[in-house]
Length: 129
Image: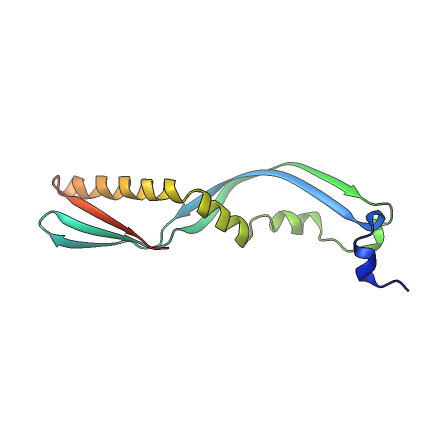
């Protein structure tokens, strides 16, 4: 017989499933450390940002294009593929693409919080990761 590795790249047996989707990623930090360094002076140490979860996943469209002989090839089920949309690569991309916004939000949030307690507070931020 023909080895399966040869057949895998043969167009008539290939299966293609394109999924158009949207979701809201929840990104944040685990624990921030704030150390006083002097009068009204603080250092805010922010650990690496993390993927917390997702919300409002919407599958807009699923388009399948199966070759004529594709019934003889393996493919994950549609539900397995949809559940695999959010993998480590996607999480990393979301974190990288939103790094600047996350830093800006952290600086804004913790500065506002500190100044609600001490109006003269001056913060220095150290971002790790």
